[in-house]
Image 1: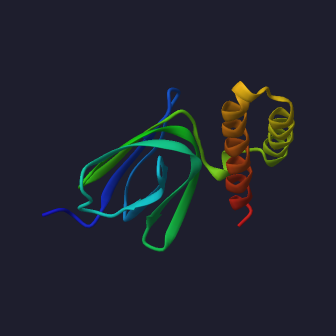
Image 2: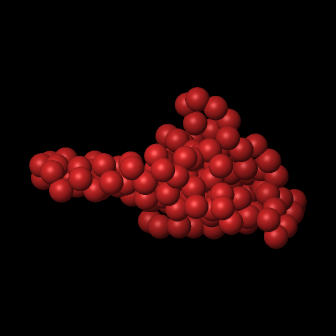
Image 3: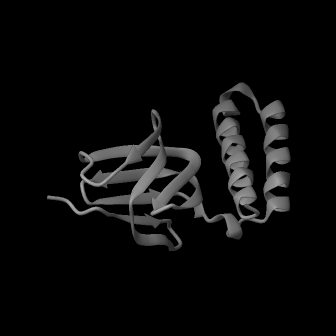
Length: 136
């Protein structure tokens, strides 16, 4: 039988962001947010820009994920992220400026670039939301 914990590994092309045992993981998947508990069925999913949430006991930790892939197995979750940042790693002023630039990009992007502009804006907004968690 499976243990009471899940091994969560979050890696980017530059570094390992998380490597620890947790009780629960929530990720921004291709079809929306999904949760993982120990014993979850195997699952491979594309990730979109969004907030990842993982919990140990009553303590929640958050990451701004910039897309990627996740492999879910009954005893572990491996996230290969394009980018992943903890709340304290994100400078709020820079993230807010990024949102403003992305909003302007949405207004000026030609139709064939709208999807990419929309993705940049979503990622910028997630970074602001996660950065604000550093103050909580």
